[in-house]
Image 1: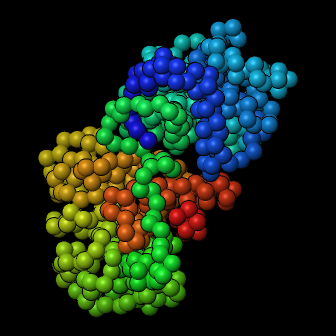
Image 2: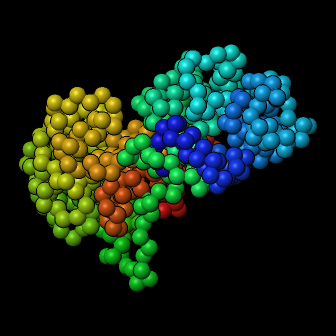
Length: 488
């Protein structure tokens, strides 16, 4: 989805209304229907709420919230910021469609599985919150904390967050999921806004074209490229993509196992894992039987041909000097796509390896800092996005900078991932991601597409696993693999 300012959205809507292309209530109904479809397909929201509590302001943001809440069959609680006659005409129309007996206006009780909907202000608000909005935001956050397994859904932009700058008021809504309408506003992507915005679930404005304020995009289900090419009926293992992996060492066997099995789950026709002799007997007995495990006395013995994609790094540890040199030569000579993760990134930063432009680098923030110190030592960027662009300018490649809002760029294309959540705060998620990306590249996706599709798929698989497993604090990386296969 595009990134655009609130002013651009308002101007596009106004032009559509002025031309007679659509009436405002018709557009609201269309948005509510699209939002309902998105909510029904989002794993985080796939639960039957015990109640829906709607926080409603005066504007059409409240109409979207009320229209969405009306789709549920459970009891509804309305917490208005104004009298009914102060609501916008379209919001009054949405409210009039709900039988009065279904709605309570009493202060909500923190029941388990409460769905809280923030329809107070949306993207049009700026400046400090005034009463009663500040009290209602505080009440909303308190209810979210007190109601077990509750979820807070913000319509468009969480109340209290400046849509264009990302500046947060005190208080600001702490949303679990936000549904930006028409486009994603720049402030929702600002560093530090993640804890207010939560997971992004973009909702298009049907039939309305909004000029983008940014060359970057936000990944969503209809984003072009988020799919694998369809296989020919005659496809066989050697045409389904071979992934060669150099990973694992004593003490870090799990990383090698997870990335190899992730590549298998993501559809690679053949997966070969190369390791040193001390790790071989351990890895050979624990990885999936479909994975070929090859012992090599030195990484210089690893072949440089015969694979469509390479993954180097997970669990390598600190190899001897001769093997470090062999890895550098392998990176330069290996034919096919190249994913560098974990210890390969640390070794590159430490030794100043030459990195080819077709490489896909997948650092977390600590690894990114070490890479910057080596490849872009004069970088003065302070935001995650600027840091990523500075690095790629100094060291051309595809970069996937991990985080709560993973950012991907190859210097020409850039995007933010919109899936995943705090349930992914568990060691090994990066190993699975690297394996998935390598498999996608082996099956024909270009480096940028493979990185973007891998990030989106792993985040969505984690959310699906989290819901299926009963919403545990963390989802183990290996629990993602069946869902990765299903989603792809």
